[in-house]
Image (cartoon, rainbow, N blue to C red; front, top):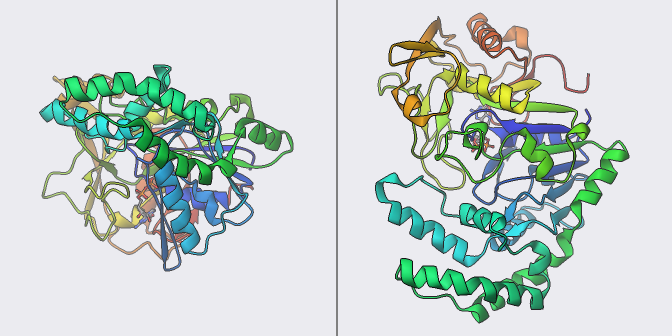
Length: 430
Ligand code: GDP
């Protein structure tokens, strides 16, 4: 299969975890290249459920090496808790999980400032996950970040921390009327993490490039989704990293010429968490999604998701900015009971028909969706394993989506288990 970059094609939560889990069965390396513990993939294996925030989903497959790349911001406590939880469920983690030595570390002041800034913004808060992600990336581009290699060297860590605390404590005390942070306390807490993380810290870009040169298969698992990309998303309602395909390269130290294929994961409908415009959001009468049963609440935050119809403008934008070769369409089964299904094919913005996704969120807020309607299929799809056995109306829906986004839908997911999957064009290696 060569190297595959897998990205979310909408606003995140597309069900990437399941598709990554499917593809990583064949991968020698699975790599996270952006984001932090604000991501949450849910993978269901038999009766066991795994929610992964930082550890790549490939960890569930013995023989796969997992890499947390340089583009990720690592909260060491979350990482260690996750390692412990996985071990508790019998997952082997020893010599198969590496953290890039140049990955930046999420510090206590990042988490604190995340919450304080959101509170200060009041009504205009972005709705961050309060995991300190954006403040950690701000320090990265502000040249004051602390990297994994600094964390595991106590003298360097203390020096950088003390230098940073001068400014952070000024901000905390003067801008937010908050108590200052104590360097000794942080050194004690992070020193304990450092000891446990040190065996995992490595030059992962060398590992990955060597592996690719040897013909090993590498899967880059995206977190969040294209519309949350700091450049290509619905700014400012985005996340602080490059969630699009290019981020896989910059966030891992692998060049674009080493990437064989880019696959986007899109839900058969659309969801969005947090604030911001969402043109195809369901009216209360249209809403067919049972948030609890259909798992439309955040794996990281527990927040329920806003739901709406499939928006072809959004996915077309994703096809463009990621250079998608193929799509995995997930959660088709959630639409099984819909009598009529709608697809957004254009927006009406101030009386004009618009078919390209606009960057301006003020325009997006005024966008009225123009829909095509089709009959639903009204029968369960969960047990279908071959594309031709899907109900005719479900096939018509998928084929219309495919036409509108001009990209092959190669995988259709009809349930959360590994085997609830239809390979439309045969398994990927064919
Ligand atoms: P991710 O962050 O993109 O991995 O998405 P999440 O893990 O937040 O959300 C996806 C949820 O949907 C998880 O609970 C999955 O187990 C579940 N899921 C994935 N694919 C399907 C599917 O085809 N059908 C159904 N019913 N659930 C699915």
